[in-house]
Image 1 (cartoon, protein in one colour):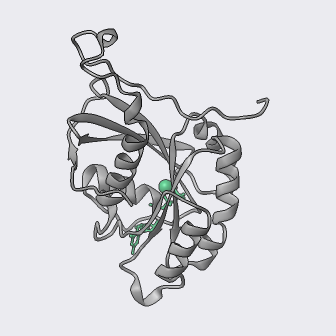
Image 2: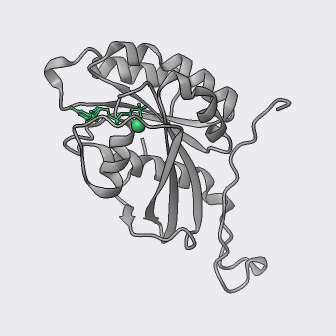
Length: 216
Ligand SMILES: Nc1nc2c(ncn2[C@@H]2O[C@H](COP(=O)(O)OP(=O)(O)OP(=O)(O)O)[C@@H](O)[C@H]2O)c(=O)[nH]1
Ligand SMILES: [Mg+2]
């Protein structure tokens, strides 16, 4: 995985960034997708389960190699009945966090279905980072660290981490890994200051997500 020591979390503004990426968070109901985002954005955690309906987004900002990178993070609903709605939000995504709950093997067993849906509805090239959440519940663990790591390696995913939205462990680093990977992949498209075509001011790169193949 990427070295994230030069990837700093900063405050931001939707209008001021050098690179903008759309990230979607997917996975079975109640694995902790919304709590991950609330922890990352507000540094808060709630024990009550509030079902996500459709999708909601929030932004996180990072400073990497002197550039400001915005991750527009879309938290989607895990419940089956929202499936057709959330697929609409997959469109134009650069990357995804695919989340399971380490205390529920059924949420791990459903990952292939999520991966297929993602590749069909977003793009076959969408970058996927695997997250095993609820690491704090060690005594109830049903999925080992090795199982998650092996799954990510076999499917050639961007990376794998275990996290806890409850304690905060791994949450910010997982977003830093995502931001750094996307930055590294797309930095060649940033206009250089020496490039006469880019003028004096640094032009922004609103990166284009991989195009969905197919007819619709
Ligand atoms: N112990 C523990 N509980 C967690 C953690 N993350 C989330 N939870 C709890 O798990 C439940 C579901 O969390 P949510 O974040 O709402 O789950 P979700 O994946 O967004 O669910 P949907 O919106 O229905 O798809 C809540 O009761 C949370 O308090 C965690 O890291 N550890
Ligand atoms: Mg939710």
